[in-house]
Image (cartoon, rainbow, N blue to C red; front, top):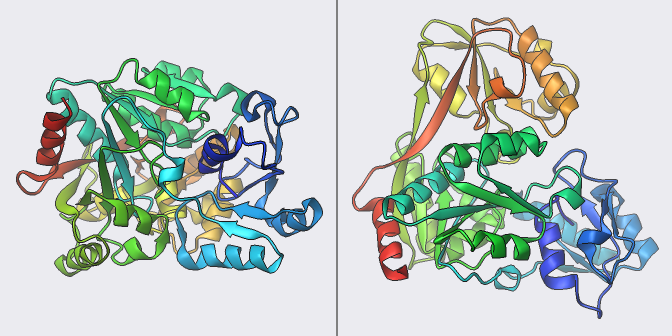
Length: 430
């Protein structure tokens, strides 16, 4: 059971070359347009000469019965503990075992020092922490190479191994907007990024040019590479979530260092709740606080603005606002309501998440979705468009009105802080 990422990795590492098992299907959830494909023979290996079909998760009960399934392996992330157990109950009621693979079983061993950056939820600021870590490694005179959690939403046979060192390479690869949001900020910061489907091959290539491997996790998934330093990012704007979601709680329990991000904008009582929860399940982890500092490119005071936020933070992460909404509120701008003007999949997303007010989640898993987002943006009356997404939307669509970017970066709030953690790691690694 997957979402075009962890599921393929679990297959590759644990099942692909094992003749004692037969993988009869993948199921797909969370991400649009990733079902009704075939995991191709070029990737599935000699035991599966015809590849493996990918079905919508809704068909799982029928698949268990029709294919005589003995075991279902849950392989995606950022879902509540209750959600996981509903799936487990369905599978066990139908006679199949329900399996959660252990973290160590699915991790690859690297020949280079490894820092992993994971989180307890989507939208904690993990990617900004990754950029901060890469910057500190470079300042120490070492070369970081980032391995990004997989996002193979297109033709799988072309995505076995991807390497990006320039924005042109990202565009030429035909990446979706969701992929670009993860790759572009790192590449813009001068960090080479690898991703794809086959992480054994990806790791082997990355090690050829890296002094340090930096794992940039997706959602709240566990690392694919065994860490020498395991950083986990928590969000005090959602206190309690660190113990309520899978596999975010597993990350929390494994962390060498918990990074309590956004501590500059959270209530002290909520920060304390997160730290107390962490101490209860992982008393030995180091805790550091960092600030997520929002920067606006221009003057927005008194303007009517259309806020476009990072999509996964809202749809997967359960947040009802992001950096753009916070920037509008703090800079005296009025956020407008785009709902009356939303079309297609953008309208469907807003209908599915009625709690989202006066903002647009950036959805772009296909060219059609990007066009629908573009039409919605250009139809919504406003003075300015606030682009608060990691990718520069002005590069992927035509915005026919003034648009300025909102960005956010991690900054220290204490000494020696996260910088000290990275410094100590580099000193003991080289």
